[in-house]
Image (cartoon, rainbow, N blue to C red):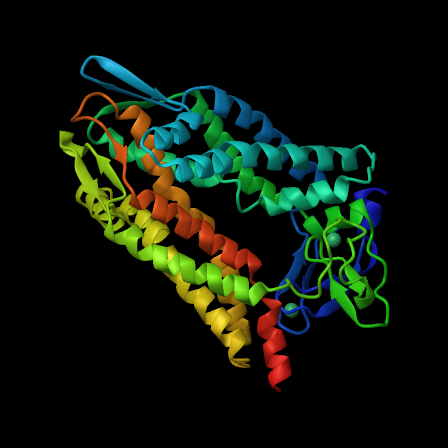
Amino acid sequence: MSVQAAIAGDLAMSCARCGAVNLARRSRGGGWTLACAQCGAILERTAARSLDAALACASAAFLLLIPANLYPLMTTYALGASRQSHMISTAGAMLKDGRPGVAVAISLFLVVFPLVRFGLLTVVLGRLKLDRPAPWLGRAFRWANELQAWAMADVFLLALVVTYARLATTISVSLDLGAYCLIGAGILTLFTRATLDKAAIWEAIAPARLPPRAPTLACEGCGLVLPTSEEGHACPRCAVIVHARKPGGVRRAAALTLAGLLLYIPANIYPIATLPIGFTPTQYTVLEGVKDLISAHLLGLGLLVFTASFLIPTVKLVGLAWCVISVLRRSAKRLVLKSRVYELVDEIGRWSMIDPFVIGAFVPIMAYNDIISARAQPAVEAFTFVVILTMLAARSFDPRLIWDAARSAS
Ligand SMILES: [Zn+2]
Ligand SMILES: [Zn+2]
């Protein structure tokens, strides 16, 4: 079944925001946009999306990630010597400074997950392009999608910009081949997202049947609309166990949000790193780091780090708490606003990893002597766990519960 053939005809689409099932009529060629009849969310927008473009972007990103991991990223020069960093030495530096949790997180987010995600996408899209279906395609495409938030080559790209700009004001620094490959891979990551028409790919893997008249539920992994009798069974398309709503979602989201909130206090009070800015080792908390960037006349980068490290975690914790509490209280107010807040929280959470990445990028290339040396401090671990816990909280919360609570209250 080719993608073009698959996207023609009727299609049952379940809204990920509110759970309503919408019936769409897809036509051959031409872009279209479908909005949910209940909540107005855009279910799928096909304009400017194509299998060929997504395959080109994903495979090029995968190919660039290999040299980005093998070649050096940055070199600094001081005291007649030089220091070089690689992608993996960012994690190694954290391990050496006694932060194994951050080291594991960085190796997964920067090395393993991007390679796996783009490797899987290349294989799945390539197989569809060549008309060579396989029973494991659905599972592989679901894994690739689940890794979207956790593969952070694009986030590291911004961290690299911050690191380079801050270093360039005090020390001689150059970007190396690995950094250029990473810049390419990071940009292609964004292009892959823009060109990937997920609904059409799912249709090409296995077309959705027309929804049965009986009550239906939607698969969490691929959105396939199924009769409720399928609850607890494996989805025929992506093999995830199907549930009408994520089981235990509210309790888990509440516990993870609370844990994130508790860790957020030490993450902000204690120093996150010691940096030899101005050739005097100074300890910085998250907000002191922002102040330093602004006083170095890097106002834009200061605002960027402030947004990523302080504003986003705060919005995330408040937003998640609001969603969880309103579900527990069965509130029927401001449903669309709450759904949008949830979507924002789910989308932006990963960008908070900029700060730990910047510290990881600093440490290996600022290791000259006792004075010119950067060290990670305890708060970087607390901070990294705040980011991971709130990302997991957003993932485990089921936004459709916001609408369920309103329905059961009325
Ligand atoms: Zn909806
Ligand atoms: Zn599925």
